Image 1 (tube, rainbow, N blue to C red):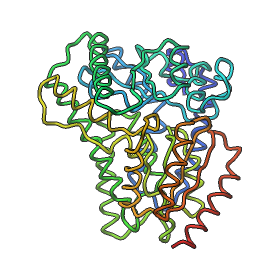
Image 2 (cartoon, one colour):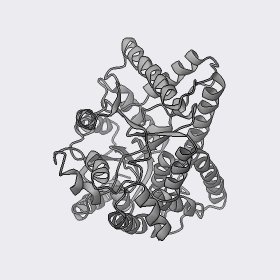
Image 3 (cartoon, rainbow, N blue to C red):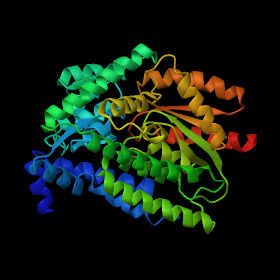
Image 4 (tube, helix red, strand yellow):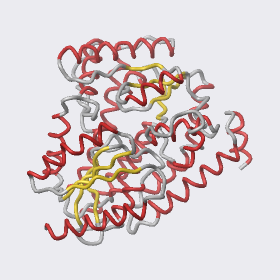
Length: 422
C-alpha cells in the first residue's frame, strides 16, 4: 500500500480518489468476469494485467521514461503503432471506461457528449489518472466532432483522417502518416531506420495474428472462450506491454486448442449466437457484454474497435524501404471501417462476412450515447440484416448501471426471439 501511495503521489495522483476508482473497477471486474463458470485457466493472467494497468504497468512506463524513453497518449486505433515502436516510443491508450470519473469531467465539458470522452477526461481532471504525467503529448484524430473540439480545448496534436476513401483521400492520409513519422523522430531524437520499422511491422502483425487465432475459435459450435473473456483479451491488447501480451495470448491460444480437443466449451448449451457491433467497450466497461451473456446470448464475434476492427488486417511485410513500408502502414490503417466514413459500404460488407463466417443468429448494436455516426449507421445495417433474415437490436447506453435492468429485459426478450427463429 505504501509503495503504491508513493508511486501515485510521485505522479501527482490523488491517492484516496484513485483507491476509490480501483475499488469500483475491481468490483465490476469480479462481477463481470470472475463469476463466469469454466473459464480458461490462462485468463488469470489477463485478470492480473487488468489489475496491474494502474500499478505494475505504470511502473514499467515510469522506468522507461526514467531511462530516457518517450511515451504518448492516444485515443484511437488509427494512430499507427508501428511508427512509434520503431523509435521505442510507448503508446498509452487513454480511453476511459468508467462511470465513476464522469462527474469530474462535467465541471469542464458539456454533459451531452459521449461517455468515453467524459470518462477519460474525468480521470485527468479529477487527478486519478496515473498516466497524466507519463506522456510527452497526446495524439487525437478526426473521427468524431466532439473529439475534435475536445482536442482543440486541451491543445492536443491531431491526425487528420479523411471522411471518404478516394485516391486523393488516401494521399491525405499517407501525408498524415508521414507527418506522424516526423513527429516520432522529433520526440525521440532518433531517425527511423528501415530495419527497426520492419521489425515493428512484424511485431504488430504477430500481435494481430494471435488475436485472429484466438477469435477463430469462436467460430466453432461450442466456443472454448466466452465473449466476455474475448473482450478482456482485446482490452488488454491495447494497454499491456506488447511482448508480454503476445506471450500471454499465445499461451491462451494453446489452451483454447486443448479445450477444443477435449470438448470443453465456455458455455452450457448451444445458446443464441450473436455479433456485438458498434461503439467500443474500453477497459473497465463490459456492461452490455455481461448482460447479454447472462441473458441467454453468446457473443461469438465483436466488430468494434475493441474487437476485430483492431486486428482484422495486417501490414504488408514485403517492402523494406522506408517509403514503401510507410505506404503499407497507411494502406492497412486506411482499411479500418470506422462509421465516420461516407459512404461506408466497407463496414456493411465486413459485418455481412462476419455473420456468415461465425454463423450469427442475431446482432446487438451497442451505441454509446451521442455516438451519432454508429447510431445512424445501425439503421442501415439493420435493413441489410433484415434482408438476410437476421434479427438485430439497438442498445443505446452509457457507462452507468442505471439502465442495466431495462437492458436485461430487452436482451432476454431478444434471446427468446432468436430461439423461436432457430
